[in-house]
Length: 266
Length: 258
Image 1 (spheres, each protein chain N blue to C red):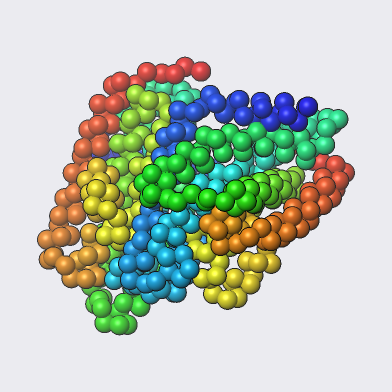
Image 2: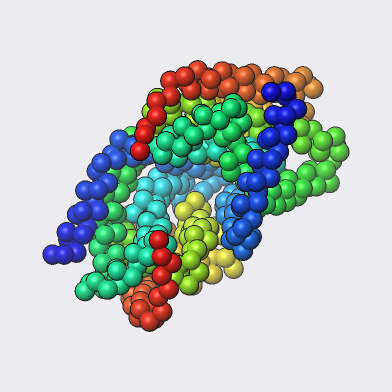
């Protein structure tokens, strides 16, 4: 099949997925509002502390807000398109992956559009905190307007990195079947950790967050350059390279993993 | 006797997943470790009041471990699921009161989480952060009472959330709302006295501080047992609400079917 027809097929599958989701409109709206509320309560926790104590290790509320918002928006982008990678366990345990394997298309392409998620709550919350922190830092003259387009770019590279981490973790499921507990560590805990400046953590931990689970490249490293002028424009090129490398490695791992797949039956 | 059986069955069911839970404990401990690092970072530049940096680390270690017995309970005590499957109609017909029935089961779950989650996580923190344990028996006793009260309160709150599923068919939004409020008002990450004044006052009007803040303060030796009267008062009030709400529910059950 030609590449353009794959894209066309992908579009159709996503459209179907959205349509099925919109069947329960009230639920959808309520869930979106509450998702935003939960996210905001999490940020408020830190905002209240910063309100009382000022900066944490030299990072202001605006800067931490920026770290937080970039991470939220990157995660949102990843989960919008790649939600089913995060929920692969369901397919492995229930044997639903068998059906996808029989389709005449790459498994990932069949898997991803199964449940296209529209995460308005997260977009609203992340977008709001991002605008607020950018406005605050621009007002004080800390950053210029160029940070805006560059921020959009790093949200994209961040989403690719998070997707790669998610895909690599999911792939381990071909050996272990159960992956949810592991995902709590590689996805949730790691992401939450990177919502704060990595200098807060001991060296071994920030080291892990930059190598084994490279969430630090989603928001922390770009922020060092964008907000504090550390390093040069090469930092952004390096981050893009990290994202491409992560994606290539995880796709390769996925391809190898799928050859080890054994149906659970049931 | 029946209640004891229900509780021990719930406990035993969980034993099957001990391995997976231990991995999960690692993740939970990581969250606590991260929050402790945040306070260590703040403590490097600021004095942290009566707690001090080590005190705040102990605070976080205790709240993070307590979450498993006063925060992370079965969503709506499992009622939303039984509403969806229609099982609720059968549950209401049983000669056992729905509230006490579900509560007994949840106590089994809590006992399991206490032994296999709270204790291992707290022991790990004790080693990593060289935590000091209370020396007075009364402190431990009052803290244990505070925690038991917190679990009971949480059971009641989850029951109320679960019961609303009968009307809304979807109570997960209340569950998440409850979770968000707990983050802010229970003193999970920030001691209540450091909240803005209006928020602190609001928190004390709710049962949330009794879920984490009160047991933690008692355990760390900052309070005597007098705050436990508040726990008792809320437990009584919540029990009343649960009983009334069950009565209303018995009159209006709409079963979804399978």
